[in-house]
Length: 503
Image 1 (tube, rainbow, N blue to C red):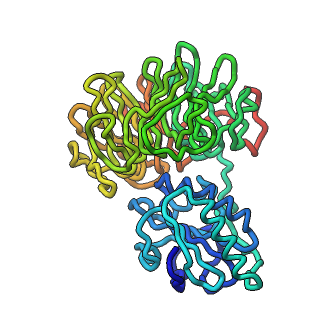
Image 2: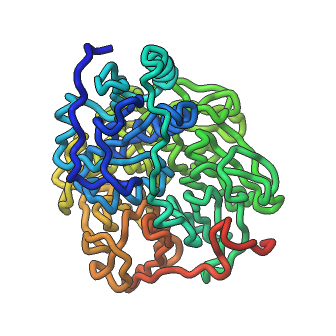
Image 3: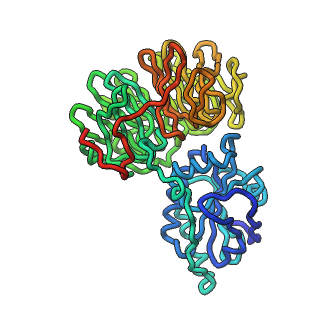
């Protein structure tokens, strides 16, 4: 708790989203207000959103939540990019674009996320930083309402949400990852909470999941996911493994039997950041973001606790493989290494390669002796980012989310630079191959192309497939000519728009 301080007024001339009009502290007198200081790259900020949704529902007649978006990365300062994040994460409260950290500084905020609580008289009466504070906030709001009985303004705000202007009716919605296999192309249709399977001409083979967010096993039509991301495929047994990110679970999909089942996670988010392990179905996970299969093991980029995990598919046992749980960049042994929101994973059977997003770096993690962690390229700093090709630590990336090992090189989705880069895992040399650096949807060749926050990629034969996330499409690249085209999926539509055929 902090002493009562009058809440600084919110700027009226900055961009506001999810509302037609700017909001003011003065206007909100009589209501409890929570200011959520966040930035959309931050996994901890994303973990707070369900807590805020819970509180908004519980106290909808007396609580107003306002997101204050104080950007970490350059790309996150763009209002349009923040709008896309609001749509992607289904945020339904007003969001103020905090240009130049003005509001952050006026409220003396020091970390993402920070939640400031303002009482009905306009005083800041408490704050919490980090995630996992729902109960504490719940108690504080109840206490404040009791103390201000008779002074509460029970009139609900009328808001015009961004999703009313831009509903997600595209065939794909914020596809996170893509996986090319001999059985076809698997797309994590994250915004529609399903997996789309097609052949390489765009003919739909299967729709896995009914399009509603949930954690339900069963047939392809019954199953439910919640913002699924990375995938790995067992060709011999025709089994797809899925990082079911918002469910904090791993799912197994039997393509032949057309059955989905959960193999790890309980559906609850783990709060244990210490290295640990246990039986898959009894062990809580924390935002698994991508998968790589090596032999009979799944390796998991566990973004939520900054670690790499391993699942033994024979025993069903899951455990921390590398990372202390701290957030940062530290090379060395598996047990002393430190990562920062690892969000992409690939391998060459000797080494795992990680897109370590919050330090904008590519890391290597040994699978054979000596099992060491190293930084392949990137500055390795939490605030070391940019767009610079070069060698090793001289390279600057910006919140890279995807990485794919193919023909002795690493293809990297340099997400916030809207580019695809090629990295030598041996020398650390990094060069831009696709994209001119501006957000857009432009086919063409090489650097004369545009993407919008691409976050997943997969290569097979002579093609590279890219999840062009904010464009809601999959792009295909001819690796011989570097020609980029946008794939069309025949008959695919958003779950609520049309009734799918029985694929």
